[in-house]
Image: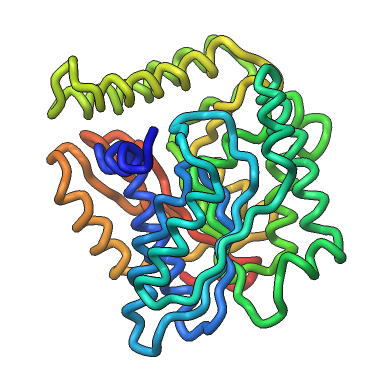
Length: 334
């Protein structure tokens, strides 16, 4: 996609923007009064989330903080795909931040993208090997000293990311998984807040029969939502439905490291975060109001509910996407 097409894609239904809105509001609250902020962004939507936060920071009564955003050089090989480089995305963000008078820096961490491009036939395995290497660097004192600065507050943003890390039933019986290793590593960075957003379905099981059933019981939602306002020959609808088809194919047809779509429900994610040692942060009423205002711009079938630590996007009463916020253990709010 072009950048313009990507913006239209994420605005089509609130599947992505719900998480952006809830996360940005929680981050904005967590960094109130901070003068230097560093966001580690683990997401699949090419930083389209951040102009809204930059704009909000520019309007802070006490003035905006300096903002650094760091992204991995490799993302999970899942839609949406963009036809510009990560470096160009960063330049566009820098230009927007300059326009809004926000001091800004964009960093890319990880391996050589050119080498990774040569590995397209094994891109799933490449992503996992890359990410294992990234986790190693995040616990290396020499790497940490070059990546982080003593006077900045760390924010970790995970949007549709954890699902791509191996964590099936067999792995959990053997030992810690890449997913748990990632969360323990993030905990060690002592972030001011960690936001985790993903689709509220349980596809992280070894049983093919169960995965097919859970796919059927969940992935009707985007098809039904698109049916309400777009004709069948709409290019946007065809693109979106094709990406859902990509997800279904991956869940049903692949195993091992090639099965990237390993969703776990919001309830299971919350338990995982607590097991690692995080405490949940309740979303404030201001965040709830902002999310409701966003949903008012879409079809009447969309709704929102609170479910313990989560805010949950619903379609006709069925859970679709969850948003959660976390801090290292003992610092959570009730």
